[in-house]
Image (cartoon, rainbow, N blue to C red; front, side):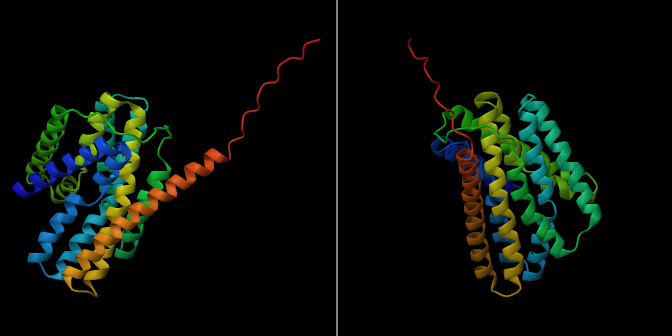
Length: 270
C-alpha cells in the first residue's frame, strides 16, 4: 500500500512539473507512460518467476483499451460538460468496456494487438482544440493538492478492491488514477484546449504503456528478466516518441493543405 501510494504521488507530481515546464501535452504523455505499473513490475520481477510476471503483464494489457476509452470520453465530455460530469462519464465508460473485455477473454495475441492499437486510435479520435505548447502556471499549493488527491484516490481504490467481486476488483486496481486527477484539475483552471492537449498526450503515453508490457511479455520468454525489463522501457519510450512525431506530422499536413486566404482587392479609383 505504501509503495503504491508513493508511486502514485510521485507520478502525479512529475507529470505536473513536466506540464509546468513544457506544457500540458508533455505532462499528459509522462502520465500515460508506465511510471507506476512499470516500477511495480520491477519489484515483481525480483520476487516472481518470469512466467508469472508474463501473466501479470498480459492481465494488465487486457484492460488498456478501457483506459483509452476513459481518456477519450473525458476529452469529449470536457468540451461540453464540467469536470465532475466528465469524470463520472469517463469512469462509467472505463468500467463498462473493461467488464466487456474481461468477459470476452481474448487470446494473448489479440489482447496484445488490441492494447497496441487502441492508444493510436484514441489519439486520432481526440477532439481538435489548437493549443500552442508553452509553460503552465501551476502554483505550489495546486501541486500539493494534485499529489494529495492522487494518493487519496489510490488509497480508496485499493481499499475498495478488497471488498468487491474478483472481476470488479481487477478493474478497480487498473483504474487510471493520474488520468482521473490531472484532467479534473486542468479543466476548471486551464480550460478545454489545455485538457484536450493533456489527454491527447496521455493517449500517446498509453502507447508507450502498451509497448512496455508487450515487450516485457515477449522478452521474458527469450531474455533474462533484467534485460527484458530494460528492453521494455526502451521500447515504451520509442513508441511514445514515434506517436508524438506522427501526430505532429498529421497536424502539419492538415495545416498546409488548407487553402490560403486571398488578399482582398481594393477598389480602383476612377
